Length: 312
Image (cartoon, rainbow, N blue to C red; front, side, top):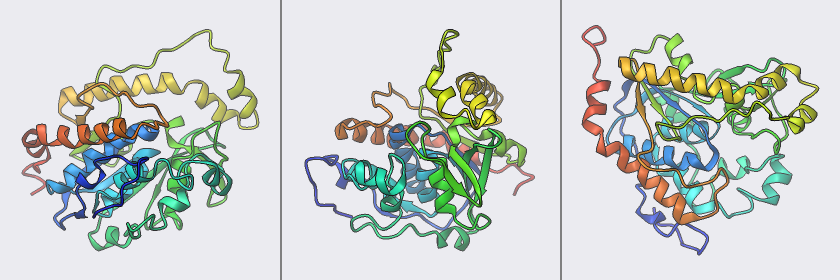
C-alpha cells in the first residue's frame, strides 16, 4: 500500500511490506514485550515472521506488544507499523486531541478505526483461523497482571487500551467493571502464562538488548508514585518493585533460552529511541532492525518451531 508521504512520516514507509498473511498456522505461543515506541522493533519482527509464513497460533502481548500483536494475530502484514511510522506526529494518535478523548497519551480510537486508508483491524480473522490473542493489563485493585482474551473478553479493544495505558500520564481504564493500567507495571514479558498453559514452543520478542538490566536505586523516594496511587495499595506496591520484578524475569528468560525451553529474539543493535521517540528516521531504522533480525536467524527459528514427534 502506498501512503502519501509528509515530512513527519518515516521516509521509507512505502518500503514496508503490505499484505495478508497466509493461512498456515504454526503451533506455539509468541510472547511480546512492551516498551512504547521501542515496540516499532516488534512490528518489524512480526511483519518478517508473517512474510516468512510463521503465524503462531497464540499471541500474548503487553502494552505496545499487545497493540502490535493484535495485527499479527489478525494476519495484517504492515498494518501496525504503518500506524507508528506514518501517524506518530498526528495529534489524533499522539497529542492533545488523543489525550482529551482517550485520557492518555495514545489515541486508541484513532488507531483502531481505520486510520488513513489502512482499513479496519480484521478481528474476524482470529476466529477464522482458530487463533488466540491475549492482552495483559495490571489491576489497580490487586496489583497483579490480568490476561484478557479475544472471544472471551467482550471488548478486546478496551482491554488492549488498558494494557497500553502508561501509568502517571493515563487515566485508569475500566474493563468489565474494574480498573487497569499498563500490563508492564506487573509483568513486562508474560512468558510465564505460556509456560503455565503448557506450550511446547514459546517465542519471546524482546525490545531491550540481551545484556540489559534495570538499575535499582535503593535511595529512590518514589514520592510521585506514592502520591498518585495511595488509594491503590496493592498496585502501589507493585509499582515500587516493578524494576526488581523485571530483573528477575530477565534472569528467568536467560535460563529458559539456555535450556531450549524458549526461543528469544533480541534487538541485534543498540536501542537509540525513547519511549515517545519523535525522530521518524530512527524509528524506521528500528523497524528494519527487527525485520532483518528475523531473516538473519530464520533457519534456526524454523528448526526450533518444528513440532516434536508427539505433536505431529
